[in-house]
Image 1 (cartoon, one colour):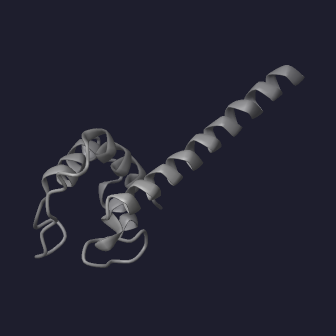
Image 2: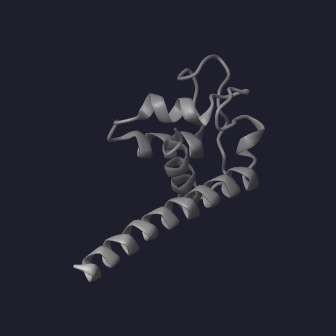
Length: 106
């Protein structure tokens, strides 16, 4: 019984460590790719707050793929008149990391 509880504790601790690592990687990548020039986690700047993006796309199965495309190619109209420019400096893998991080914001 003690062994099972230890295993559960290790799995839970590992999950929290993974979330923390993703949070750090996402924020670091957002800084490095200059995303924070137009976005913030909880406040609208030029573009929407990441928390607002996460809320808008919560529960949508295709949200990650849709947002990866927007990060890479840009977009317009979803959040107002100001378009989001394409980001050719962001790789597909980086866009996926950024989007997963954005969608995890609460």
